[in-house]
Image (cartoon, rainbow, N blue to C red; front, top):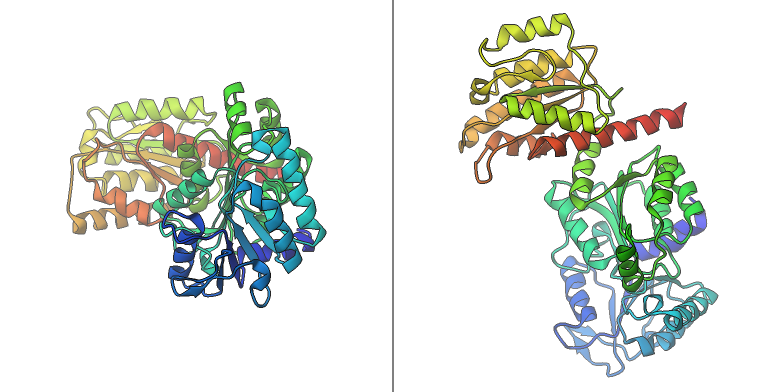
Length: 468
């Protein structure tokens, strides 16, 4: 990463002071909500700005940014479009290091808006002020108490987030939190008029607190630079991207949303392949892939050992793995002999997939545990997909005990393992909950489990080729 980018973006993610320009006493005013949330998070150097002055939430309101004493790292600008140009001049003259331009109505509105946007960037850059947006909600960093919305996670973790959409930015942050992970830093970058998603990718790629990056992108202004930056980052940390604007209608919607330049699907896929970017087609796939990449070691190959209780799960798991390019090899004779010693003779199979029968679902701490232990030793297997169901249980003591037994078997096996807990909605299966809480990826049906393994394999193959 260039020293210049780090120095310019650090005050935007870890500001010592923030100005809220365009604040009012209206409870629905964006800057007012940000003031309330920043104060609640413990961020103290906040300077509300409104020509009327006064006081809000016990904090002095300044008539203009030029009236604020001392230096300002970051300004959140929520004024109407017609006032943005003058506010930009004031922020630049004040020497504010970064502006988050919440206001919309620029390049996404047509040529006139694009020209207006370019003028803003010209004024800001002349004095060294960088611009995020417009049409965005800006930066987030819980470790620096930069938390603009009360619903967002207060604790930091390993996942960096980039989004062209403000709403989907918040959606991603909360989804990551719900998945048992935590965000490190994030940015909603809107129309990329000055700082772009690639700038933020480069910054997060070299951020020591970020171990994996997820992004929702609607377009790329500089595909060549994205390729160079992603190629540098991908061997060190995974980059998972959901790209919008893949259809004509989607591209039109993207242009009217943020004004970013959509990339044709064929070009995007080629770029991802060369850069090591893990491309997904939905937020569900993004989260499933994120959990697998974060929790699992990298497999040495594409060979999957499938362990199930009912036969239907064996068939659907096998189909899903094959369709996603994974391999289902034969187990060794030794492995099959050991499996036969634990499986009931009626309605079971000890080939790959291994079908332990419905009786095994009643006692996963015996059947599933031993099957994982045995299959993991097979030299023909690189990773394991275990799918089992059973009657509803609601006993935390029993469920914790079962989970601990399965966790030990997975750890002793030493191969990436995912669990498919195929149970009807509303059936409590506590051992699955405890497994998920203990960093084992748990999915509700076989295709999602297989998809996660396929993406894990894709990234592992990229790493091997990058190091060759």
